[in-house]
Figure 1 (cartoon, helix red, strand yellow):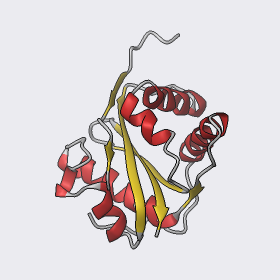
Figure 2 (cartoon, one colour):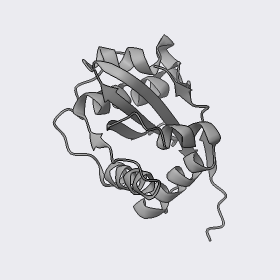
Figure 3 (cartoon, helix red, strand yellow):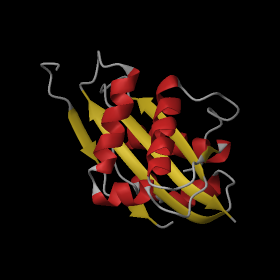
Length: 165
């Protein structure tokens, strides 16, 4: 075990339902993003739920929110005076269901991609509201962005769960 005790904060879930930036659109997910999606899907399958496919518009909405949280220094589902449904709509996604999990971490330098994905998922599993989003029956698609603030060293994770209309 590492001597460093990492700081890991989870936001309260916001299940309800910033304008989306173009980066991420048409781009492959990072190794960490892909691994976290795979782990979420494995967890859903272990609980007799369908897997989630990655949607580019949801990725764009997730990235826009990660950028907003960094720019405003506000780790919140309402950073930038928006909510998850606003952000997915601004990205061009028409939804019937949308939910969002956020994670914030600092002090994880030196951890492997596998460890980071595991720690993030376990944090969400151990939070009743986040776990409810992970195991929601409605979503069929997901979007994800993991972005590091180079000034503060903090990393922000945004994962959306949605069903298109």
